[in-house]
Image (cartoon, rainbow, N blue to C red; front, side):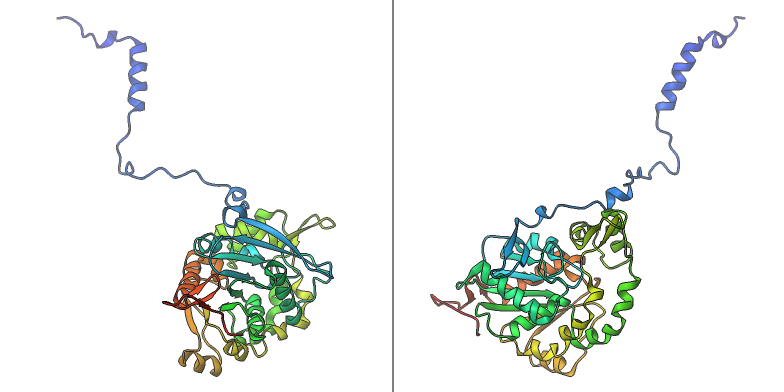
Amino acid sequence: MESSNLGSVPEETLEEQHQQDSSKPVFSAFASRPDRPPTQSSSQKYSPLDWAAYFDREEDVCISDSNDVFHLYMAGKEGPVVFCLHGGGYSGLSFALSAGKIKEKARVVAMDLRGHGKSSTENDLDLSIETMCNDVFAVLNALYGDSPPAIVLVGHSMGGSVAVHVAAKKTLRSLAGLVVVDVVEGTAMASLIHMQKILSNRMQHFSSIEKAIEWSVRGGSLRNIDSARVSIPTTLSYDDSKQCYVYRARLEETEQYWRGWYEGLSEKFLSCPVPKVLLLAGTDRLDSRALTIGQMQGKFQMVVVRHTGHAIQEDVPDEFATLILNFISRNRIGPHGVEIPGLGWRAQPRS
């Protein structure tokens, strides 16, 4: 009886067979689990994004008879001008992601207000409502002179107050609409006593821009990472003495003006003689009798936006842009004013 040939298999053949077997997939209970995508480092996840992906250009507007220079971000070529005013501590880039969609059917201009972003003025701490209104009028006059296009004012928080005060003056003859974002008088006034504590309790110094972006998202002030990556860098400035980034806007030094932003805001809002809409974050509500009655009488439209924080335009930019474009369409606001169907002329908004 011959001996088995198994014992004569060369070692090289066994090694090759082992290598082939090890290269075959191993079937197990976990074989259907997808591979994990490669993880991003914190610096990659929170790295700044270029505003040019959303706005078409930027421009500095020099105000005559002063050293004031206001920085603007602009997009779109046709339609009415959606003129955006950001909240305290934000910048014009707060509207970047929404501008990327609005510009398809309208023009967008987002302004860095005094003491914010890349704007530079003789007194960055003068955030009185009167001064900020004059700044808006000066910029609009520098841009359009005596022939302004139809303008829809959009203001968030502090910027919403500025927008209301500008509209209530009834001197901007091409004003065609007003959009106020998450600010109502009662809630705003009640929050003022807590504002210094809120400002002092937030993170004050950042070793990098990425860290500031990360803090804004993790801390909950912004819920959209991409928007934060665009908007946060211009809310910071580098402090050489401290060798770190700090906030560009020194809001804690402007307390004397805070009450003036919001006092009497409800009545001024209702008095504005143009179509208007109030956008509120999901947790807010009308907090005054005047607004409640006004809304019931159809003097303005109110929209409660769910699943968002205070910065609606940043947290849900696509929904925000849709709301703006629907407002323009519903009120038939064209590049020169309110369009009258069937007629060969357009009516200018009431002044």
